[in-house]
Length: 238
Image (tube, rainbow, N blue to C red; front, side, top):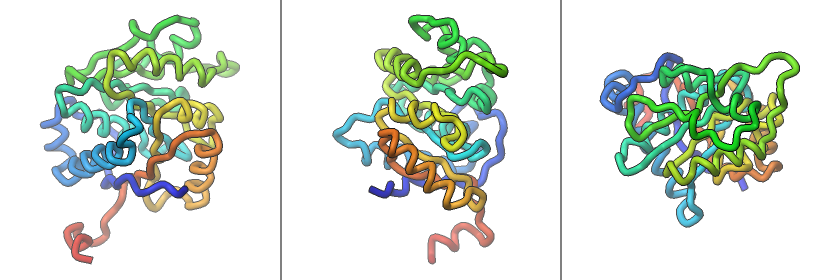
């Protein structure tokens, strides 16, 4: 079954994320924030009845903007003070969440897996948003690094569920790291972030196929960094 369109996000540069919803509103613009809210609501509707507690934010290649989408989508969920949200960075070679949320990268998920720790509890980092936390990628692996077992990542995600209403996982590139699809299959659902007018259609189709073959439930595709060569309001009249 082809995934429905989960939503689109306007063009945005990679930079440290604003730390409050009000700052995000000023820097991103109301329409951009509305797009993330719409994406959040669409995901809730798509998963209605199934229970969406863990969501994988995937990409075909590095540079699609999945960290930005994961961060802002998490903020959209966390806008409700009753919802506690955790972000997990499982992209060990191209991590981005620590930059957006302005926290230290070290002492994160990779360290937990490498050390064989029973819990990730001590490596959960707080952010300026009281109900948004992050587990960073951790110490960057070097050549010949300790191999990551996606099942262990799934175990970590389950550990977070008693503490958080929603867990979002920024995965490695699907067409580069074989662990990405396996991690996504450990989640209740997955979305595929696509860099508008940059990512080839064939790459998107291949990434989607690999996710589905791994058993991941692909909920939709997010078109990121969409450009408007004519004023945006005119598109709404076409």
